[in-house]
Length: 90
Image (cartoon, rainbow, N blue to C red):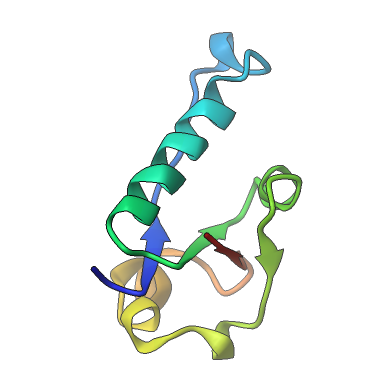
């Protein structure tokens, strides 16, 4: 599998927030990525930097993005330059 992955979206309905559902979804996505051979999971966020930081993600410079990530539509076009770019080693 690829050595790195991009977590594209994680959303929980407002009525289910603070229930642990988001953490369960994230843990499942991370497990799946590990099972696929991914050793580093990247993400871009404009609203949830603190949430992901509490779960082991660190903010890094966009210039540190591997080619597989920097070539993605999210990285190149969809997420604003102000979005936090984060990574977690799995």
